[in-house]
Length: 253
Image 1 (cartoon, rainbow, N blue to C red):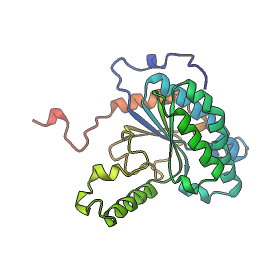
Image 2 (image 1 turned 90 degrees about the horizontal axis):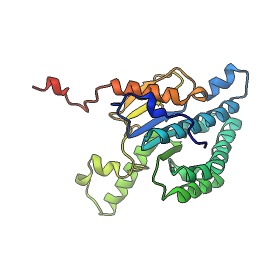
Image 3 (image 1 turned 135 degrees about the vertical axis):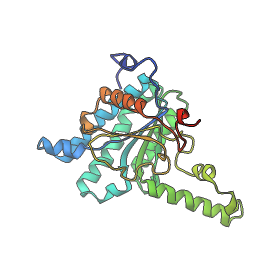
Image 4 (image 1 turned 180 degrees about the horizontal axis):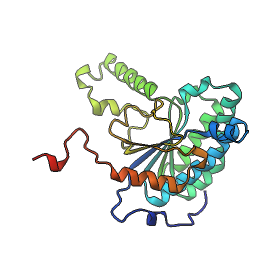
């Protein structure tokens, strides 16, 4: 992770509101490679470079939380060599980026069903979380073996166990208590979801947390995603009127 070479904040209007939590579906790696006659895994290697650029940009812009969708529970259905390559890439990237995360004051957490991951990947996830736990800058939430539906199921199971044990009653369960049983309950809900690659779907991504998030879909494939695309998405976010189910203040007379 290199030092920023430009002042990205100058690319935003002075009154621009910075999202507290940006979440990105890193889509288009395979298509990027296929368009160039390359193996799909080479697209994922280029996607890693885009992830580094975005982490750096979020740190410079003062975005508190960045969530990156790295590997879904559905991705196990891909061809074996691609799955092995993806898992190996995540593990290698974490090992190689750990020092930079510490230097740049980034706190790392991982969300997903970690027990189902290879032991070597679980170890490095634990190591990076532990070594960055005291960092006070950007929180980087990497979603690995993650699915929005499985997260909701896991939370429901945990609550059911507490009910069965007599620790809570069904009447105690509300949105706040349910949210406390999600994978990363300490994080604020995403304000802005960015989907490169042009696909108009959520792909099982943070289904509970994004109830009121703003979605920006961009045609650029993830390996080509730059800080300029992030800036453009934030500008688009600032054109949206977030009502959270209410009417606009000017209409509420």
